[in-house]
Image (cartoon, rainbow, N blue to C red):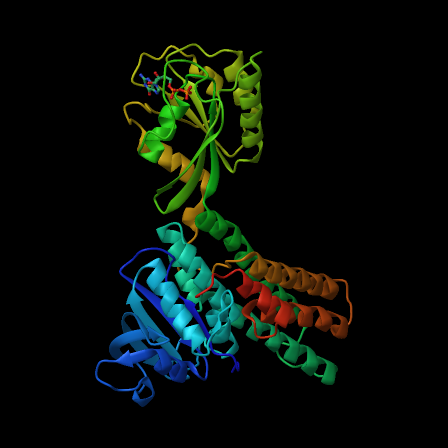
Length: 452
Ligand code: GDP
């Protein structure tokens, strides 16, 4: 347990119903008793865990606010330490003054993520679960929340622990084989070792795949709307946003810069950009806009390419079609008007016919987007790695186990293969934080906000 007793405001900065000042450490209760006076005259030190008193917070004898002080006794608290949570009225000044009162009475200001770090150091949660708390706080959509909640409840750690137990079993088999090389012991043979290594490799690979899909669910997918001027890009943007985010006019070239907005649908977050219409132009400003569009087109994870059905296609349309990759949804817009365009040029390509103006075909459009994004393969109950650090550990584990498999196949000694198995084990123990350096731990919690 740390010697410092720390405090911070654990609620968001701003106006709200209540603000909570959290104090954690050996002296949390003594410190709180110095600045909090209950109406009943009782001291917080006289309470059992999970008990509360109603009273006032004072700073050097000056009343700050009415407050409720809630006591948690170690180890039955979030951090595993003695903890007091003082709730005052939510307001920037009240919360700041109440925190100052607590600091004046002997607490030190908590660092970023210090409460969660203490919970980790006191064995209340492992590193993978601790990281998921940050993701729960910043979840942008329902599915991201479900994934993060499953990770917080130990889904990732359980999966890793299963793989670790497979690795330990394998290492034990290697030792038994080395000790009794001439005996026929069931299961101790090349085929079985090879199968076990493959199973482990598959399990780790699945985790890596899930990470990529989970990243899309959590961060949203970068999606740009492209097409010639006047095909209906801004109208589509506004339809998806459910508001007039982009200016819609009949004048070509209205959108000259990239306009961004984030929308949620079907548990998926789209980071949308409406771009300047792609066409040949001598206008310097338009040219710059088109260059930005092409830039977005090359980096977007999803492209919504819009074409106008009510006019014949021209060279600009053909150029756009030829530049599209597998990540594009071809949208034939203005299907409420008479179709003039010759859609034969889209032969063998999947298209979606819509009217952005009249909101026709949106369901088909969402299905087409889902087909490309493919996050529906991810179940919220799956073990999903949720940080670059976790992915890096899993990747190292994967590389080591693949190396072990190759080493077995080319007939290297079990000792050499055992080294690779050990490396895999170390990487996975680092992932859950069972064997991790202080530097890594510090780095993880530095990304947290103060008060968490
Ligand atoms: P952008 O230049 O590609 O962004 O095109 P806009 O969204 O500004 O639309 C250009 C014009 O086409 C506007 O007058 C829109 O009202 C019109 N428009 C856009 N979508 C549709 C549609 O689905 N049907 C019809 N009839 N008009 C549309």
